[in-house]
Image (cartoon, rainbow, N blue to C red; front, side, top):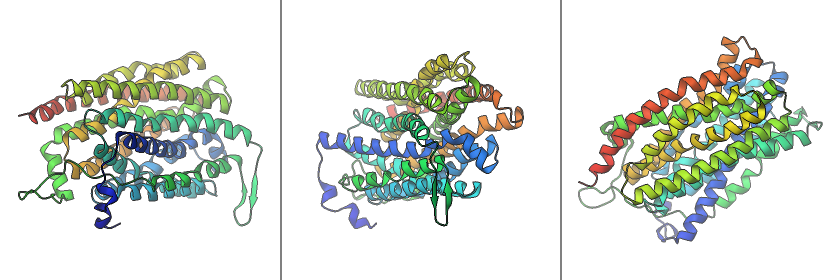
Amino acid sequence: MSNEENTNTEENLEHSIEYAWGVVIVLMLCYTFSMLDREIISLMVDPIKAKFGVTDFQVGLLMGPAFGIFYTVLGIPLGWAADRYNRKQIVTYGIALWSVMTALCGFAGSYLQLFITRIGVGVGEASLTPSASSMLADLFPKDKLPLATSVYSLGVFIGSSLAMIGGGILLTQIKDVTWTLPIVGTLEYWQIAFIIVGLPGLLMALLVYQITEPKRKELALDADGNEEKVSMRNAFNYLMQNKKLFLSFFLGGSIIATIGYHSNWYPSLFMRTWGWSEQEAAFATGLPSLIGGTTGLILGGILMSWMVKNGQKDAALKIAFIAALGIGIPAVTMPLMPSGIMAAIVMIFAKLFVGIPLISGIAMIRMSVPNQMRGQFTALYFVFIGVISTSLGPVIPGFITTYVFNENIEMTRYSLAIAAAIVVPIGATLIYIGWQEYKKVVFAQED
């Protein structure tokens, strides 16, 4: 990808608001596919344990660090690339990579091979949000960006729900199916499912390639009025100038987001605690996520846009703090409910709040960071999410079950409740600190 591609004729076209919303929908679908490929493994805990003879903790490593570490490590260089090169191409190649690697998960013949292919999924998915959020910031004015970001972020809950509901149906329909292939040997039904959900993502890669690269706006300028070439050192210096804001919110938002990744264990919770089937557990996990998560993101985005338009420039982190407080009770009590039905209902309220800090962080970066640094700051935010939320979110409940409750799977509900009770107060406190600093930064811009 060359710098010339960044300044071609296509890129300098101004786009209509209708086109901008069309791009949002395409990118939201990409996010949906990324979450589908990321989360489908949640329905395969027991068959993976049976095939490879591993513990809950080791499965947690597949769901978390195997994906999250490289998702995290590559976030910064891909964010740097998003600030300099053709963003639609970065996303296109990333989708193709994670789709192929998801399909290859189905060919894994050992725990190590499955671990490596999950790493590949993380590498590909690291390309998406830094470039996507940078593109959205160039397509929408500040007062409309929170809603656009919310619509894009719907992919989190639509994809997770599709993984649960669609994945549950798929696994039920193919449970008695096996494929015998040359060299590879016999593939079990859950391996076939990886192949089926992975390959359609290649069509999304082709669709993204048709997007016109948006013209970059609000660029930082040098003393001569020319576009300033911003290095990683410049971005680091800006971070250090505002370290209390960015580090406290990035850390707090990521800690709260671990609640979202506890849901990797929710299908197992319903099957182990209330004896539900795979398909029933999938619906019980997916439907509340779809209802609560999408409702929370849309209402949060509308409210945030309205508040910014009416002069409340600190709206992004004010709403994030309210959401962090709101998630506490439902996240802790959901796994302790006396019935699966009640747990699913309470889950709706947990999902209502869990996605809001994500869009708050992206909106906060748009409001407070120069254009040439936004990709890097978005990537840094997702480094925190990768290290803390994506990597540790699934691991903590599995660790508690394996090492505190001695692999007693009937204690899964208590592992989830304990994990939520630990992370919510810490995350909410850090978000509050970030909010107070954010007010100083955004209102100082008026002076």
